[in-house]
Image (cartoon, rainbow, N blue to C red; front, side, top):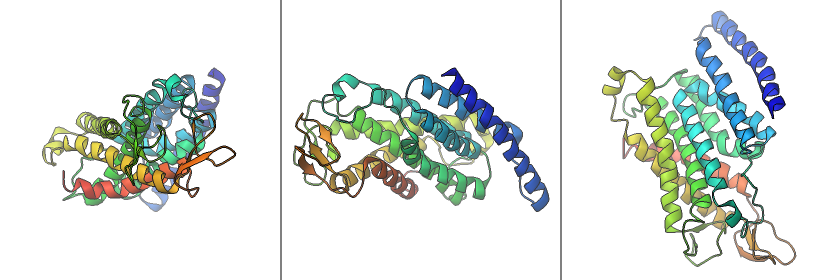
Length: 320
């Protein structure tokens, strides 16, 4: 494990230094702002530390850790508040995945001990947020800005899009990983409200929806606390009340979970094998429950985070 950490460190630091030199040269030659060295260094080192923690806890594979460096770099470079969003999602979702793992193994065919994420899962969960952060850097520069949809719409929209993508992922993870084990009630298929086996894609419970709301809320809390610590008091006082970001994050978690359930119920296959476990692929002895083979779980996660990132800023207009 130490060798993997040293490899990430020794490879990432030189590449990051070369990229910063390139940024300095291009900005000096063609105009534009130069990213301050301290922010660039933090955008390099903080994701490495998070990747190291994930590797030690078996929350992420090596390929997932490498991919996570790019995701973390773009988010941290854009805003430290984005990094906090990512950190809250990664830590909280990892703990939720490990919660009562022995019980989940009874009805999940593809259950992984520790919930280790590979590069595909990292891209599908963090790719949309990374894209929005890159657009934020291009349009607004690097730095933390409070949400003000009236006077700073584009930057606020992109900030809320990052929040929406990550609150969606955390809310959906809490709904599926905690909602399934914290209630004894049978899930109902979101499209028809008929009872379905536990673990079925598109199955929802009241506790699951509450968990998705709370999962999005903790991401919103992280964003709000980051703004309190990093943005000057004068700027915060001249902006709308930022505590409402907590509510927006909670709505993002709930909205993302509902979108994920709708996609899972209609476009993702769910079946039960001979052992009574839920599977996502058809085969001998597999009984169809609902859905089709159009999307897999990775595609559902990616589309859900994208739709939530687009819709949440519009929903925030009712709150902020």
